[in-house]
Length: 340
Image (cartoon, rainbow, N blue to C red):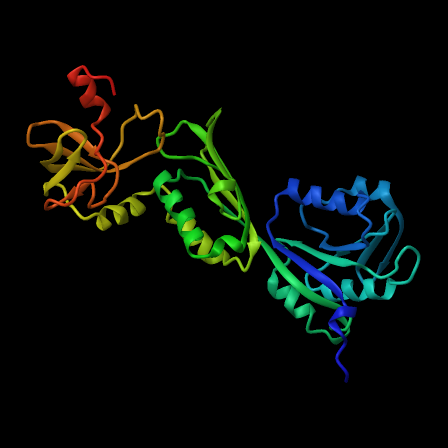
């Protein structure tokens, strides 16, 4: 059998995984009612979120039901095919093939498979094993959406480190967008984060005016391609403010409580002291809610300071080259009558 030329096939983009209702509704409304000049078919499962039945009633011009697949043609030449059962994707694509050339249908420009939780990437690949389907369409891309949620606070340092790791691992090009609301430990207000391609220049993260009332829930939604949902959920779990995660942080620190260290102090250089506490935090750090310092150190002169990072340029066992300062704690400044 001679293979069909890919240029004659209809390109398909599959969106699988959870997609927020607002984004899904905007996508569907734009395709069905927009004057974009394209003939696009949306194949979706009947139990997906965000189906606006009233919108379909207003814009449809014909409807038919064949083999469990609803097909609605819209006034702008697009269509919605709804699968009734898990595994009906191949049947829906065949139905679209049969309808080409009928009524408003000429050649389709694109097909979008919108699966939500009922459909995954495996479903898409299985459907494309069907010879009739493969002769009609070609799979251009699978875009997935992974929702990460935990009824727990996150640690600001851990979540920032993770997002930095994603950028340095080269995953930024595969992650189209990240958006969510986080409950940050020690912070009473909601932290909202949004980024495009994990680019720091296109990222916005800030504490809003809305305070938490009731359960504190941290949620992130990532949209992209080749997303490993299992790995992402595991890494998100490692950013939660739990006793287990903090135990692992402490185990990774270079110095134990009681260790003799040298800290670089602003205006004085290196001073000797001992570590008295791990994961030090002050409620009065209003400018950096959620910030946790790895060490609190009591200097030999009795002054309490904190070290903002476990960095040899700030805290060491032996002298090293001069670097940035270790900040004195707010409470110590107040004790000495000096403004912090």
